[in-house]
Image 1: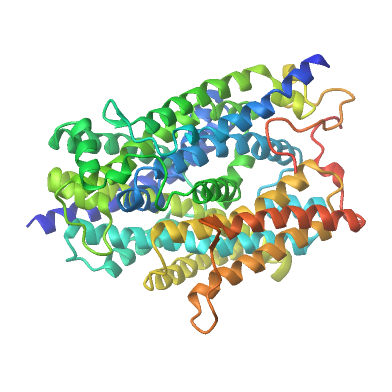
Image 2: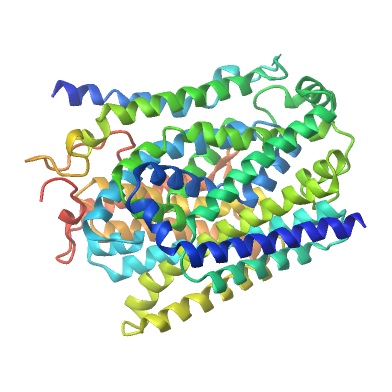
Amino acid sequence: MTLGLSLGVVVGYLLFALAVGLVAYRVSEATAEDYYLANRSIGTVVLLFTTFATLLSAFTFFGGPNLAFAAGPEWLIVMGTLDGVLFAVLWYAIGYKQWLIGDRHGYVTLGEMLGDRFGSVGLRALVAGVSLLWLFPYVMLQQMGAGEALVGLTGGIVPYWGGAALVTAFMILYVVLAGMRGVAWTDTVQGLFMLSVVWVAAVWVVSAVGGVGAATGAMLDARPDFGSFGGGLYSPGFIVSTAITIAFGVTMFPQINQRFFVAKSGETLKRSFALWPVLVLLLFLPAFMLGAWAVGMPVEVPEGANVLPVVLNEYTPAWFAALVIAGAMAAMMSSSDSMLLSGSSYFTRDVYRPVINADASERREAWIARIGVAAFALAAFVASLFRPGTLIEVGDTAFSGFALLALPVICALYWDRTTRSGMIAGVLVPQVAYLAVVLSAVVGAVPTLPRTVAGGWDVALGLMVLSALLTVGVSLVTAPTAEGDASRFAVAGD
Amino acid sequence: MSRSRRDLVWIPTFAVLVAFAVPWPLWGVDRVVAGLPVWIWWHVAWLGLCAALFSLFVRSGAWERGMGLRPETGAEGGPGSESGPALGGDRP
């Protein structure tokens, strides 16, 4: 009975979200563009929320509370610092410059911008390929999150693979039906919905257990170590390297990076970020504290389930718990959808057209993109069945892979002397090294290389330093190629 | 000139904002204030401070000057100014 209700709400809401996406797409194709083109104030809000919507993933809703439940509420500090502060600073440093350059030359993807600057199709395809590579675990993460969410909501009656398959099917439907254009404002609506619903959930649960003080008291009774800052998993090395790799990684995410180009007004890009730290905190505080408080609650979290659905099931009516989970899954679905769309534009613009088939018709290109997205999502689904790590581990792997791109890109943006060889070395070598580390954990035949050294320092952080050193070092010893044109990145004068 | 030199203050400001968003001075402190560990309150207050300083930064026009653009002209290029030093971010 309750099971039927929960599943009904979840599937119903997913269908509803799909329908809203479709209608929004049909009706407002021009309006979505208008937001960016015409009205500065709306542009700011939409840009802010579409960027915010990328936070609405399994990493935030399920991975974060799970980690806070297992290791303590310090995760709030890590995420708040990296997303609320460091990412905002990078938004100014990378985003605005990229916008100015993109505005002058009409670039749409990162690979296109770099390929044009350095006169290199190879670099363009390399950057796109690397981006697609790390998009894979991130899409997989959404499927894992959805699978685990339904296990938690239904107490294990719906198997893990069932939830993962459900969200995969909706992802593909969304892309194939809604076409090749992301609908920014459905992200915005879903973002606002989830933000409010998470607060309602927090108030509901907290009042059921007797207030914030009582919740924290019970948490400290169960896990006294949760009260003091640091300790356990949260070593300084872990905090610093996680914050840095994720924040830099987020700026290179195809979907986020493309936002740097699509804003039609520099003003929009500029203003958006003043409110960012507060907005981020509003989402993270209730979500992660619910996870941490759960240790003091009389709830049983099944193996392999997410903690948030379990807590909601215990303290809120079944329909509300199902609604939160459905909302989270819908938000995850639509943001992974935008990621898949950005990814497919990387594939068609930077790999397929320049490398494979320059004469493909628009129609053919659109179909290649759709089939590519479906194949990508299905492959990620199959990989998600093996559950290669926790949500946080898988997410962190993806973010770190993207982060290795960031310093060479910053170097290219701000240092005229950067050469093509410098860029290729700075991108390729750390990627190969990191891939070896990641794959060594998956492939049984080879010894597993360490992911962290000396008490929680992520090797990806070292590889980021390597990427910067290689880019600068190789650039200094090689001459700029004739095809390169540093003036392409000049933003002042003519 | 003195104006753009004053703009450089934003670089250490941002460094401090990022560095102390993590409540390092409260490492190991386990006091609970108003229902939450005190270091969570530090973080909440700090992110509020960040929001305030970010909006100040945006209004100051330091960003445009750092990019070699004049603040009055927005995205238009300033005369005779090549892309200047990058402000408000890491310079590799």
